[in-house]
Amino acid sequence: MKYKHRLTALTALACASALTACSGQSGSQAGTSAGDPVQREFFAMDTYMTLTAYGDEAEAALEKAQTEVEKLESEWSVTNESSEIYQMNHSQGSPVTLSDDTADIVSFALEMAKETEGDLDPTIYPVLAAWGFTTDENRIPSQEELDGLLANVGYERVELDGNTVRLSEGMEFDLGAVGKGYAGDRLAELLKEEGVTSALLDLGGNIQAIGERPGGGDWRLGIRSPFDGGEGVLGMLLASDCAVVTSGNYERYFVGEDGKEYGHIIDPDTGYPVDNGLASVTIIADEGKKGDALSTSMFVKGLDEATEYWQEHQDFEMILVTQDGQIYLTEGVEDQFTLSTDFGNMDIHVIKGDEQ
Ligand code: ADP
Ligand code: MG
Image 1: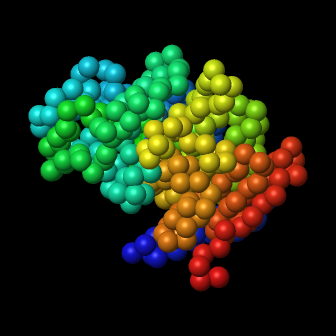
Image 2: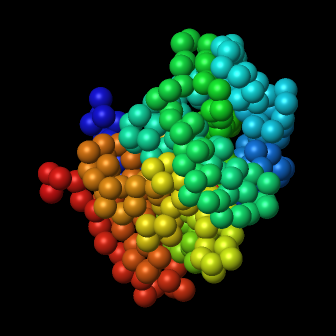
């Protein structure tokens, strides 16, 4: 099953790249022949989203897409008192009944938490709040405070049975690490149902590519550099019909009184923001939710453990960038990724599967 998955992902990328080679530099002409893009920009799930689609159905489909994201946000917000996640977090130990959507994503988050041995832990929220990431009033909590909060962290203690969930008192659940990815999958499904065959969705850095670019061939996706506050483009990735999700500590971080930078991805083992030498992790996967869960958890794992995890699974591709300027990418994207000239001096190392 896993092996089959891997082949699908690699074949999609490989075929798409052959098409790009054929279509060469004709990108803009191809775009014109398929009509002008329709674009919709809005703020949701705490980030800016830009949805771009082509074809006659694009306009109406994108309007529905925005409505869908807003619906999911209202179900999942940790701060909106009428959201299902809020009710779950304030149930003081009693069971709560979830809608199908929410039960589905809670179940997926728990599954990925198990799969990553708790490096993804959707119950980390109270620790995140202690560092001030939920209010922007950042501070460094004492070890004693962190120890107290960590006692209530542990995905394995969340009881989910069908649509009924029960959290023990003091626990809080948050979909910050997987929600946008799941939303990307949902929107891709919706747009396809509406007849859209070519679209690029940017959900705050989570990219969902639907089909190929207009006229055929891979989308050219800019991968942001984790350096200098994420301003530059590290390189270009060719991909179609997949999700490309990046996590890093360069977007949401603060500088503590001790002069150190603290980012918003927390290592559930220590309660401290991840500080393992990685600057960013980009995951290329067939599903956005998987890419999102993996981008966060591989960032927590760090270079060596993420490499091991990939070698055991091989049903996704990844690009890891270290703080000292090294790039590690899995063999399936070696030919799909090109460094920008600004970063041309960075070293690229290829991660191979065990059988090689
Ligand atoms: P972004 O949301 O910036 O694209 P991520 O997908 O990596 O980045 O999600 C980071 C968010 O996930 C944090 O803001 C926080 O809400 C939550 N989070 C932080 N650390 C973890 C963790 N170890 N496991 C699960 N969720 C986490
Ligand atoms: Mg994520």
